Image 1: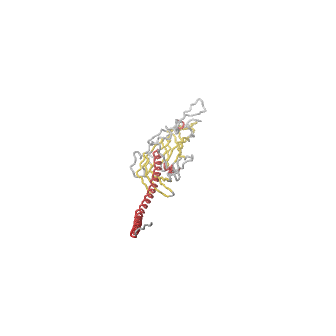
Image 2 (image 1 turned 45 degrees about the horizontal axis):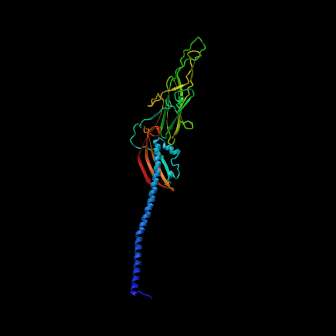
Image 3 (image 1 turned 45 degrees about the vertical axis):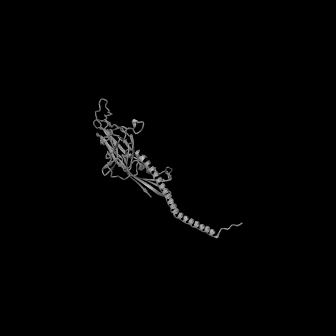
Length: 346
């Protein structure tokens, strides 16, 4: 038996189906209107997140490099020369496994108009070997004391480009010798020979070759001998040097007081004591940076650490730093001032 629905009911069902279809289309349209900008927002938010993550990671990598350089400053390192000879960015494109290449640029020729640190107007005076040995075992034969004829004393020193070094070597008179010979046994020689001192000081490069314009020769009779030279270290020429003191005293004088009297000068020379105040009749080495007649014992730097990835610059950290007393006196405790710290995003 077949049961047929009334025509009116069938028409109502079809109407309902049409309404559901229309409602579905409306809901889908509303969904597209709402979801499209939401998806766009999520996409832009994710892109912004990746962008910020990239910049943040780059900052941490560059900041780690700056911390490394500042630690060297605390240790008294001449970071300019260090970066010139062995660049800080040796890790290539993956500094500290960060995926970033950190390039470093250091300028040491700037000078801030900041208050001068206490004591910065003084030269730093060094003992070239009068009382301090130049080796760990303190071999007294290495001291700059009494030098025999032809003997040399080499004082090693680290110098910073743009700084000045001055050497003062004062030699005391040797005891006057008496006549050494006469033909007549019954006649005693009474001639008095003159005191005489002669020497040379010179700056040498690390390979032993002389630095032009630093050699000073001198000789004197019956008076203290003083040799002195000043030299400005060229920019970019930081490194290890040697100051060489040499006794060239080979003095012999014939006395006419008595026949056949021969006065041979004492060939050794004796250095005067070290002075930390620059007394001209003492022996010392002093270093400093002189600008406009004032001597500074600190060093200023502009340090730039730039982070790059996929051949694109991400950011740079630029710091202005003052190191006191600086690499001139690297063995002293260092004070680091950072008056400016700037971050530049690209």
